[in-house]
Amino acid sequence: MDRRSFLRTSALGFGALALDCLLAREAGAAAPSPFTPRPAGFAPAAKAVILLMQSGGPSQMDLFDPKPELGRFDGKVHSERVEMFQKGSEANRLLGSPWRFAPRGQCGMELSDAIPHLAGVADELTLVRSMHTEHNNHTEALVMLNTGKIFPGRPAFGSWVSYALGTENQNLPAYVVLRDPEGYNTSGTLLWQNAWLPAVHRGTEVSTQGAPLLNLHPAQPVAAESRRAQLDLLARLNREHQRAHPGEPDLEARIRNYELAARMQLAAAATLDWQRESPATQRLYGLEEKVTRGYGLRCLMARRLVESGVRFVQVFPPVKPQFQPWDTHRNVDTELAEIAGYTDLPSAALIRDLKARGLLESTIVVWAGEFGRLPVSQNGLGRDHNRNAFSLLLAGGGFRRGHIHGATDEFGYRAVKDKVSVPDLHATLLHQFGLDHTRVSFPHHGRNETLTDAEVTGARVVHELFA
Image 1 (cartoon, rainbow, N blue to C red):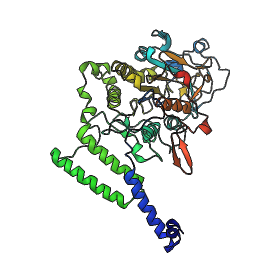
Image 2: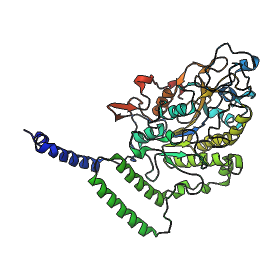
Image 3: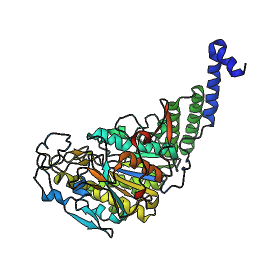
Image 4: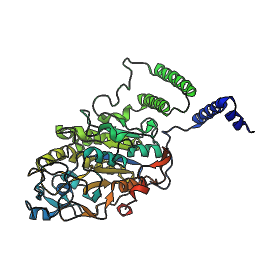
């Protein structure tokens, strides 16, 4: 009988339990830090993503996807009964866009005059007009865009990137969330959860108002030497406690986060201090104007973070005039103009600034909402939700410049040519990080889970989007 069998069969098996405990301790002691940068599977085109999350569902036919037939048949009954989310579209009457489209840049990409600043960087953009998703409700569609499926409880895209690649800066998290300091958009923290990935890969909220991180510094000033000694003692006590409780991922994550917070105390203040930027840069992002200041600060902070080695930054829109500000149910003219006024200039400034600093080649900017809008009117002037078609923008990170991919039908209701699903998008973005979406996995409930679950979703890399 070998030793393992003896331990397993004698003394009610307690010997085997003790052995497992010892082995777990050894494995834990040898395990590398989850923040350690890890190599990609193949040569990556990008090393960071900035997701400009446009909560509410931007209207594709009023921003990115001109439909002359909507104007021609304005007020006429649509020949196809559309899928509605709310009441108010019962008449099924087509609604022409109040916005004017024109060719932009050398590429001639047609964009709306609702977004003049983004239109000004058209030659840097990849416009995907053939996106589609699986749900017409905000929460489900937002959860899908950020986690790959409509059901809460799965890791966010940023968590997968952190898990697969770590961070290039040991003094900052791999995954940072920048939201409006005044509140949360629809679905809140559901959109940056780690779920069953190790807890260290959850998105870390950083504020652009007041202290970037709550409780980062002690209430009373402490000399640097004394603070270093305190932190060293705390680290030793934490590790002794961990050795007594092996195999506890939440405990490991808590210790790692405390250690990261300690490093941020000592080294991260310069990265998070946006006021060090030149007056010209602050003007570029609209920090001098009340309307664009809040979102502009978040876009500027996103650039500073990726410049310092953060892998994934998630930027959320204002919570005013509402917490899902692109949700234009009442009036697609006035409501769209208001939220575009907050976000258009800073979004374009981010792309311009990244390019000027040589960062756009290695950084992917994604401008996306959770779904699109219907071609028929709601209550006469607004548009309801549409899961069957929406548009999004990509810039940098090896994507084709000044390129339009895919198309919708004549009224913009359905994606009909070169369709791209949300799992396709995730597979494509992971590819640009040098990662195979079918191989980046984590064991959970008896199966190796992935972001795209390609065997179920049929997710594929959209190579046509690459330069």
